[in-house]
Length: 353
Image (cartoon, rainbow, N blue to C red; front, side, top):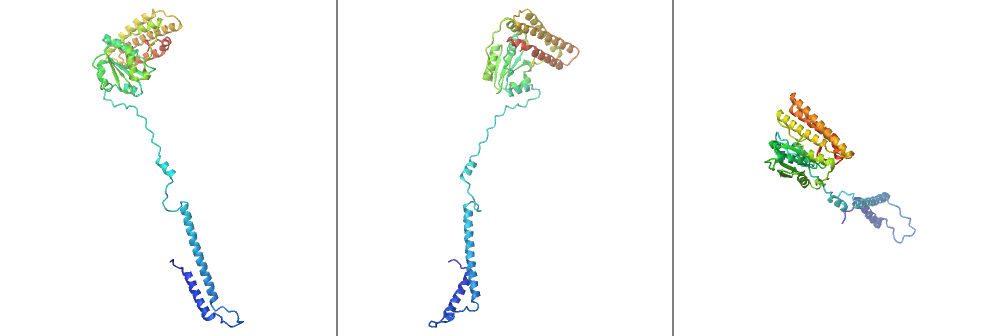
């Protein structure tokens, strides 16, 4: 049984006392007519007020308790109670279904650290840039070497995406990073290396067609050999003459390590270019484009011969071997840049690349 509050207990005792007094003292006698109305005993009015106040207090207490219960029930229904809250299914699913991490792009092949004296750095950077590299290790004294060198130089460059390097066979040891896993035992040896560093080797005499095909095999779809355009007239004859140039001054050619050797190289190049200029000059050119190409090639020969003469004079005057060779390379680059467009206009690509 629930416990009775103190105010209610007081009211109950007072009521019982009043009832006892009523039945024993205050109750009117039966048979007495016209008796005056009963009067309230002293102190009973105050007791009645106390009982009323007690009843009011009990009612107020009960109402307050009821309101508290209703508020607690309402709080529980709207989720603001302090009890643990179960997450809504949608929120739980959103948390569970986290976005997958984006896959990282494959990193480009890192350029390995080179040993002291290793000159493979520029070639490795070209491979890392997505180019195909054609490197020939040759001996200038061999007939097959010179023919293979001409073939390598005439390789389709695919808009600059094929890089050609010419290295004397005696300096193969300076390219350890490039020749790791590849045997370069004799000259000529041509390495065709793709951006994935997979290499194909051509040993001995080769032709342009074989080199171009190997570039396509190594490089993939973007490096497939295009069908050669059949040259006619002056362009065809000039192209055949230029193929006989031997080895000239161009980027990637290793210079001799001594001044007398470099002088001999310059003299040999000058003899070949003088002969080729004479042969080119007597070939008849028909049409405006062919005539413009002929004039451009003859000027290229003249400026090249002048640059060689200047280089020999600088060496005789005590100039630095490296400085003289680099100056000649720069002159060669200017000549090619200036006169090559006229030759490309008639689809001639051998003489000035």
